[in-house]
Amino acid sequence: MNDVIRSDGTVVFVPPAPGMWELETTHHGLRPLSPFVRDAYRRAFEDGTKVLVERYGLPLEGVRAELVHGCFYFRPVGLGEGATPKPPPPKVIMKLIARLHPGMRRRARTAAQAWQERRWRLEVDQWFNRDRAGMVARNRAFQAVDLASLGHVELASQITELLAHFETQARRNLETHGGDLMPVGDLVAHCEVWGIETGEAAGLLRGSSPATVETAQLLSPVARALALSLGQGGTVPSSIEEVRQLGPEAREAVDSWLELHAWRLVTSDDIDRPTLAEIPALQLAALLAASDHDAADASAPDPASVRARVPAGDRALFDELLAEARYGNRQREDIRGICWNWPGGLLRRALLEAGRRLAHKGLLHDVEHVAELSPEELTGLLTTTDDSGPSAEAVTERAARRNLVEAAPPPRTLGEPEAPPPLDALPRAMARATAAMMANLGADATAPQAQDLCGVGIGGQTYRGRARVVTDAADAWARLEQGDVLVASFTGPSFNSILPILGALVVEEGGPLCHAAIVAREFGLPAVIGVRGATALIPDGAIVEVDAARGIVGLL
Image (cartoon, rainbow, N blue to C red; front, side, top):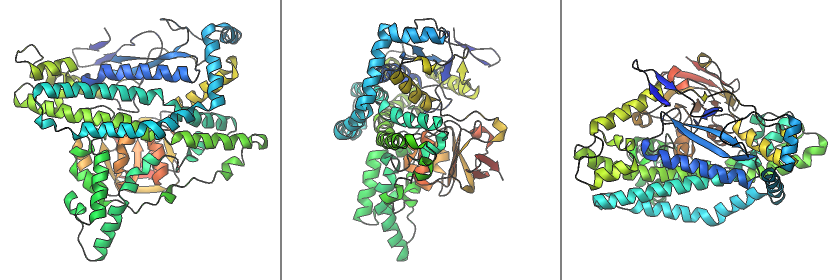
């Protein structure tokens, strides 16, 4: 039994199987996954990554995922490894295996074909030219359903359909993640060989992520209307409706933005945290912070100074790698937001309707506890009159247990460390694919001592402002004001709508290639990434100094 909690409340984490297991923290922090989505989340992760590694010729069967106290741990599984992890064989044996094992030979051919045909471009083009419009329309159709008018059976059926939609699109997101991971990782891996740090290489991608600045572009008419109103002696709007009344262009901009972003998850990729629609104060803050954004503001940086440090014979290759990385990076934030955060938010929307009904009947003590139910339990409680489902007290205990596990906190790894495969033992194309993937996975900051409040700096500026620490509470978001320093476990595309109001950014997870680093570059925000313990060590409301040049956060 892996889920052991001692009588004194100590949470014991036991490796789910041999090998080293890594805690997935970059999309939902240290919090255990909600029971309602655990199975769907795990299936999407395993099935999606299996397609990804096959598509690019990586020497992996896939990535296995296990839940320990509900926390999501994963481990790459080598091709032909079997059920029991084994250390890589000596290099000479590995070379023989890579060239004689039928599965490895097939993967090597696949890798060579992927590089030759620039397979990532096919995925990016398919997303923007074919799939994106359909996914937006599908999300809008779910969003248009009047949930309150549905009967209990109809609502249960809608939730089942939304859960399947969430799983399908999350899997699709992971299946096609190579479209951005491979070209970006390829650039970073080559730059490392040339002595160029990951942060510098990643900085060359600025302006290649249109989804990151989508909110700023959508709200440009609001900024213009607000400036005109204030210039004519008007007052600052105190409600979203007052912003809409600034004029037809402002009204259309507000409505378009909310339609596309209101029901996306904000603080997590899990469904137990609020969407923008649930926090009107944050919506208003984002509207009032809108700027007259010009697409030229996000133009590509000049790579000349970095290029000059590349050996002369490799500069044409550098140019090609940079062009491909920028091409692939276009889809990263866009597809995640549309295929994960939006379906997740729509699922949460329906679950809250079910939670309100169950709480009204006394079957839940808290509307939010609906996330603690399994899909089968929720359907049973909604559609039957018997008392065979879990009691409200039992569900409350589940919520308390998740809180206890999160506070433990979960260890970032379980089991014994495992050596990576020797790249020089693999066929060239397969080694290149493996190096590209490892450049992404290995881009996190080296864990500093918690008391140091240091990490990877993004940008060269220093900013002082009030820290708004965001962990679980929606009220922290409601109190976020223009110029605040957001302190969070991580960020994802769901954060993009509130970025324009920030003065600086501090996150606990990630490195130079993570979402927080991407958005900091796009918006010119000073940021420090990978500051372990930041949400616990920085008091909410404290004045902090974010020194992006040195990668240090100071309490003032």
